Amino acid sequence: MDSKVVNKEIKRVAWKKLKEFGFSHFTPRVAWRYFPDRIEILEFRSFNKYKADGSNATTFSFEVELGVHLLYVPSGNSIKIKNGILLPSIAECKFRGSIEPSLQFQSKKDPYIWSIDQEGSNISACVEDVVLKLPLIHEWFSQFEHRENVFNILLNGTERLHKLFGFGRNPSPIRSYLLGYVALSIGNRALAEEKLQEAVESQCFTYHFASLEEALSKAL
View 1: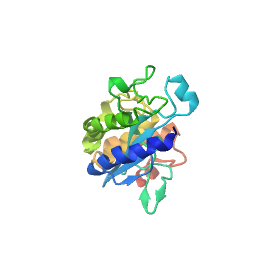
View 2 (view 1 turned 90 degrees about the vertical axis):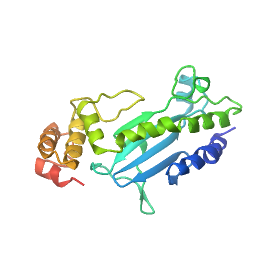
View 3 (view 1 turned 60 degrees about the horizontal axis):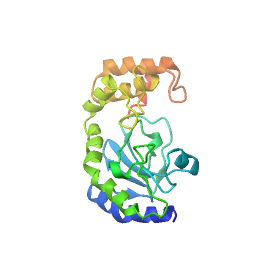
View 4 (view 1 turned 90 degrees about the horizontal axis):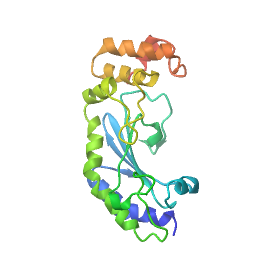
């Protein structure tokens, strides 16, 4: 039993279904879906032995992580491009979350892990359970369909581990950075300048800009 068996089942069951939902680029564990203003990512994340032992799970077990990369917010980092296709990683997304397995597939120590047994006898059932979660996955991604909703999340939202996180506490430098560019994208220039000035003054983004004027010039 090894990870190749899990990868094969992911390809057979999950990737086939995700193609119907508009996902168009795949690696053995990651799928990307493209829109004019964002990229949506779904990843089957596996574990090393240390993490697996700590979660009372096998190394074949997995989490399903979700991420959104906003194309109207400068990333500040170089995103991987292959054959002309942007391939941001989950770690590079400022909006991330996870999906919870059905109860019978959960690890006893971590309810967000699909627990595959040592023999791999429940691999198909675990991957099929992910497919059954596609309505919830769609609902999670739908938060980012409209920029005004993204703006409201940044203005009023609170990070919640597993549910929605990555965009920082309120207030925080990264929250100001994101809110500034999202506000600018929906035409709220006054708030955009206020928040980007906060980002400048935090000195957390000196690799990207050193003044408000420079920050505004980076807008996509």
